[in-house]
Image 1 (spheres, rainbow, N blue to C red):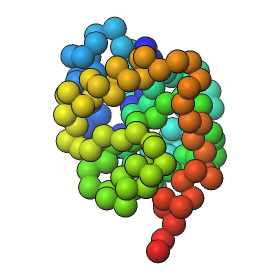
Image 2 (cartoon, helix red, strand yellow):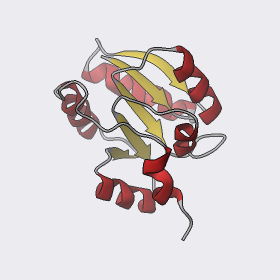
Image 3 (cartoon, rainbow, N blue to C red):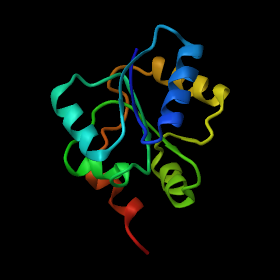
Length: 137
């Protein structure tokens, strides 16, 4: 399994990578990205991974802005500390997320879920899907 971590806090990215390696040392972290701009550029020139862990708040914008430039056709698990509005919206739209600090057991369950997911049995995420999540009231 190939995984990309999109997280602008170095400590959080290292911690998530360590936790993933403890769950399964055969999982390969193919990239750790810190920004919307860097993520867009990376996805334009690399193969799509099997799974992405994506922080909501990145150094240059909300990660939803990535979908203004590209569509991602692999499963994504959003990570967030306290973004209550987003997590409510995610539940309604059946988008997976993990609350920070990430708990090993929840992470393990999420990885197992995607490991057992039939190929192409996931949502393609694009800008239209997130328009109402980031819309200001």
